[in-house]
Length: 174
Image 1 (tube, rainbow, N blue to C red):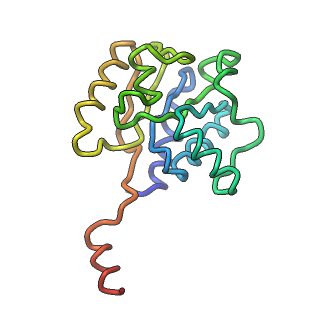
Image 2 (cartoon, rainbow, N blue to C red):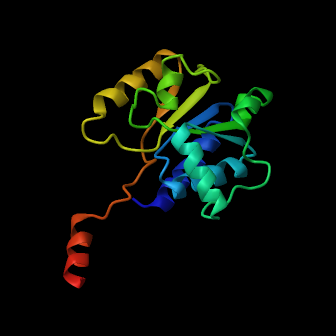
């Protein structure tokens, strides 16, 4: 599976969930993945909120350095989220690894100041749990499901790391 495949999967998710708010949890450092989410949101006429300290910081720097292209009028501040219907919004957030103080964890536990999870939410985990994080990721998923959210975590992540054979090839070439 490739990043291109992930992009097609995002398109299918957005097409299938036209009447839902979509939240996507991913690694803040995966700027290309965030770009794919923003591109898909723009294609479907959705406003994008970036939430989580590291996500906000990374996307801000990536935007300043022109590593990410955010179409004019697509990005909105979280303060303005309430001004748009759920089906016209996407939240890109931290917390895909179940970190206790990450934005998604606070949303799942009902302690986020600006976002409440509802049965109209579709939460996409665009990552695989890092070994050792499975229990905390499952805990967050359980909290989200208890609040009525739908979880999507299939075919929305590929590793950014080289496979063993590629690493061997690089070593031999060096």
